[in-house]
Image (cartoon, rainbow, N blue to C red; front, side):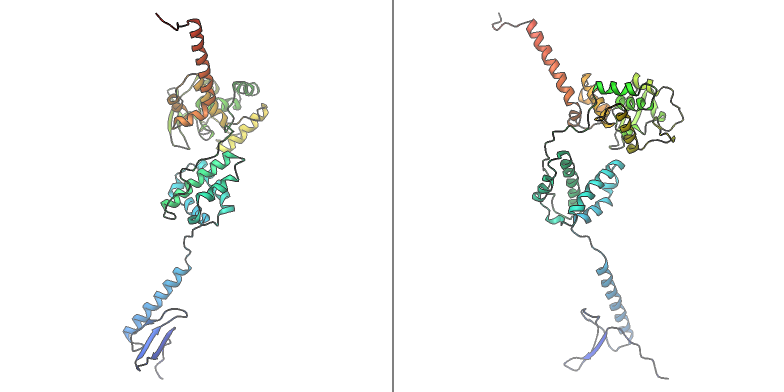
Length: 353
């Protein structure tokens, strides 16, 4: 029985113009790889095996999807980044919803070709709702900063871009009349009253209010670590809040509990509070507006911006001013007229002796 001949796939052998034998490993459409002769020798077998493995590696890499240059690909990378993972749950949800909505329309646009002109044109379509336009601008600016960090683009075209002037003031700031109207419908002893006082007396977001419990109370203070910013705070329990807490069970995980005996989620509490406001005939009021009302009350009491920040956890005076602009104006107006009255009662001579 004769020796069985081995078939080598993609092996091409021939004699060149000088009559010298040649051997190449050459898959279809690929550049040939020269192999040593004779065919079947140890040197040939080793070189042939390396050529086959190299061709498989090239083919595998060709099938591997590469990072593209579109906003949809950029968003996918951002949502999987450490930068995004460090955000609070509420911020993650907010950022993702806004950016995914943007990508529904513009996800196939190349990031490298996105200019300030393109950003202005997109934001201009939202000019009727300036708050929405400004929010999108902030999220896109952050996304493009991430694109710079990962080397997708050399610079952010939206740096320094100014937003639209808003006629609105964000969440409605509860007036004292509205607070009284809510209490008339939900008096002391009701869960709605407790919710009102918990937010109005601490100035915290609903995401922090729903997590407060007796385990956070010590020496007449409530300990808070803000979920959104991580800011630690110690807030005194004022008499009105102490009365609202009353005889709440000490073993409950939080002050505010659902009808099923569980702590509220921030969104669930917001919806529940929305219904309580509607019951009181306060359709313009919301839970977040109580944070503004707390800051307003502090400003009207003559608190400095530093003192207000110690309660609300705001980082800058500009943030506080957004919450207390009306109160500051009223205080300054009263102060101005008091000075005017003092001058009227004690006029100064134009030609003092």
